[in-house]
Amino acid sequence: MPPRRSSAPWRSSGRRPHRSSARTSPSGGSRSTSLASSDQPADAAWARVLLKLSGQALMGEQGYGIDPDRIAAVARVVKGATDRDVEVAVVVGAGNIFRGVIGAASGMDRATADYMGMIATMLNALAIQDALEKLGVPTRIQSAIAMQEVAEPYIRRRAIRHLEKKRVVIFAAGTGNPFFTTDTTAALRALEIGAECILMAKNNVEGVMTADPREDPSAELITRITHMEVIERGLHVMDTTALTLCMDNDLPLLVFNMQDEGNIARLLGGEHVGTIVSGPDGP
Image 1: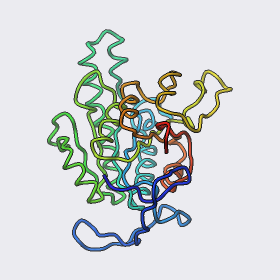
Image 2: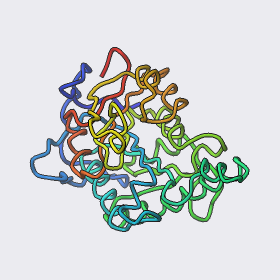
Image 3: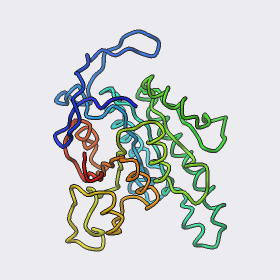
Image 4: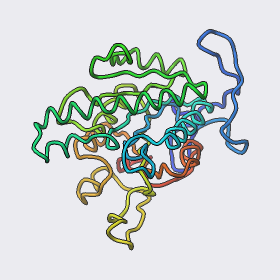
């Protein structure tokens, strides 16, 4: 796992020496990098992260499907991260197209419904890949279900190698097994590739709230909480299986509002944005 590069104000880990803004490309030549904005620091608080996107974050105001403007916005913020030399992996859901739980609730076989949801994540992954590559960001999709015409199979060591070569890796088709959510996929893949944290993007929600703000206008933002407290209080962050996996392996979550394009840049710069979900001792 790559070492953390700098100590954010809310971290206790050591600081990694600052690196030059010239990077070595996969072909061996050097290339200069530009920051997402001129006032951002060249170094970042995290070396390798996994961004978890819900399908709902991709549909914008349409209510269904893929909003090109939202896809373009996602691509911009991911490019901003890679411009700062951060290695980025992405797990995307499919709630904008199909949700297995809803299909099962309507009488469909749950396993069949979940497989449909896994396939739907590929549509989102391809859209994100297209938007990123239009911005010049090399991107690879790895699928947990064989779709060799459009994606590589998921191979852990290959995924890590792509990240080391500064390619964005999008993990599609969930875990490849029914009855597991894309939240669990995010936790599993983050641990497998050695990500330092999960950037948990929420749609129009600032972070972990004391209650559902759509139902309770007095709901307040919780700035810091442990995995166990989230489980005990039944707060909506990710499903219990995924949370337990993160808790058992001391993997922090940074929960934030994806609608503000500057939030990821601020998180990578070490600012406290949204909610930090971690173990009792950090970060």
